[in-house]
Image (cartoon, rainbow, N blue to C red; front, side):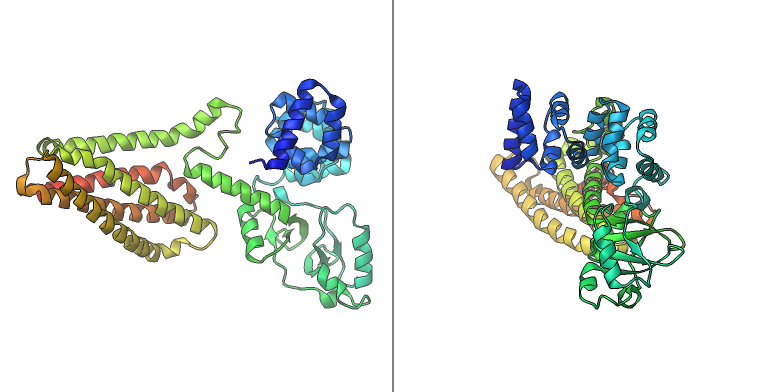
Length: 460
């Protein structure tokens, strides 16, 4: 969502591009922050966004704007440039930013671009593609300030001043001759001790690290848990390979949150609003809706099995949406809370029984409250409309409605708790459970329990 400042910037860019006033367009670009320009590019039509990008004369600023933009959009824009021009722009970026853009470019063109880049930058970028996607190795920055344990504080400060190639410096890492990480010194600590003190005497030896093959979500969780602004990446023997900074962690959190929300909705892992392919969105969404379709048909068959009961008590059919709707809503609430708890490591599969017992209590209280409400409404409807032929059976019908709601909500909380926790125990992503799988299960079970109660009570 754009704020007032960026909305004004967007309006100015559109106006000057449309009128072809290049001089005024460049003045607006010159005054704007690269982050604002990168955000605004995503709200422009592709042709206008490319015109804005081409109006940026300074290669360094153009590269910064692209690194601030969405990587997919940046890739879409730069592929319209010559490979050597793309390589020059990517060489101006830090390797983590350029690698994110290259991930969204065709393999053949990507190889062409990497060959055109300066040797040091191309090697860094190429190394990233040796690691699996969404791992620490794929997002780490290989440039960091590492010094030996014998280095004095004064020498460390001098090295800090000269470390122009390092993206962000929050800590100085202490490594031995083999490159193994031995400790870390914060900048604050560095300024508070005697300049002649060796780093060995002031470093913290127990360093929080991540392995190069660990999932990026675990990286974000560890940074959040230990309140870090950067975390070192090491291999299996403890050799330091790179560092992941807090700005990259924020991107990870946004990416993982978006991915989970899309999975919860059953739309796949890609944002269907930003995807340029209608067919790709179709392929991502149709399997989940197919599950809903078959689940709905099963609920229809369950209703058909109780056709004789419905022919005698027509009002039961009118209550089916209420029973299914209340169960579906409370089930979605429960499963969303459980998935969220698993995502932030507040829950794990070992707590299945305790969490389920608590949620069943909540579901039971909600069920009792709404069972009473629906029962009263059924009696009131029958009394005022006089549509039923049950006579003294009105109270029995109200009891069926109330117990149907209660059973539906109890079943829903049980399913909504159990499925995500069981999937987590099976090492599967629990986010996939909160959409159609839980909804379909609840609908079918709610219908069966509702009509089972109705047959039991109304058959006498």
